[in-house]
Image 1 (spheres, rainbow, N blue to C red):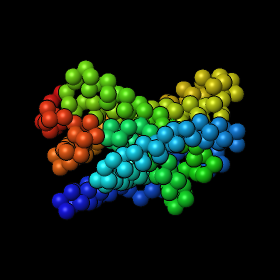
Image 2 (cartoon, rainbow, N blue to C red):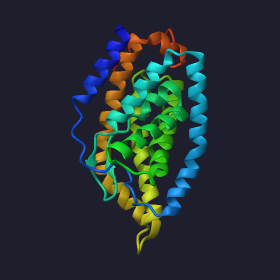
Image 3 (cartoon, rainbow, N blue to C red):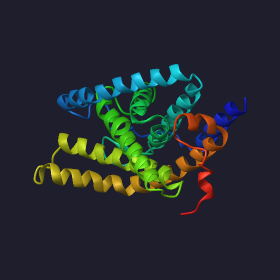
Image 4 (cartoon, rainbow, N blue to C red):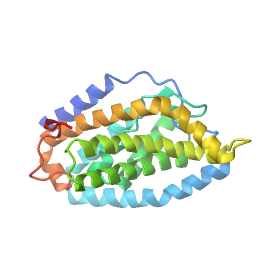
Length: 254
């Protein structure tokens, strides 16, 4: 029961900071040409298949991990609903994919992110069905893979224990929007400067809101991870995320 209370407290704490969503999330419905919708959907499909296989293996080996999977999905859902208007046809917001990528790996987050994006497109009119593949690729594939890679890299070089968590969440967020800028620039190259100028324009506008959001997401992810390391140490140890030598990650200073 104490673990269930922990998850509820985390959800309530996050929800207190969630404003009412009023802007479209990611690339909105009908914004991308059909050929690019198909391209990104096909490109995302293998990652979703791999993620489904991973989730099945994880839950079959240890059903207790279902609660952590649900928490990772809920964390992504809530954070990705925090939106600030940025570029026509899109918006800036946290992604929440770093936590799940650290816990379960990037392909699992591809599946969880796709579920989040589908629900938000259908129920909240954020994003879209035709642009689902593009949004999955940016938030559910690039973001988690970058977060996972940064986390593993910084763990290997013996960095302060809080730093891999912070950098993974922050850079996973930023690279999601680098990818979104890339997608938009491919679909809508500048009439004079082509793809390169369009890409730089999208990056420049996104950076105004996305960099502070990414830093905030990194800090929040460290806080939540520290909470989990206190109350779910055995589960994180079994997932090879923590070892017996790991202490409270917030007890160390940069």
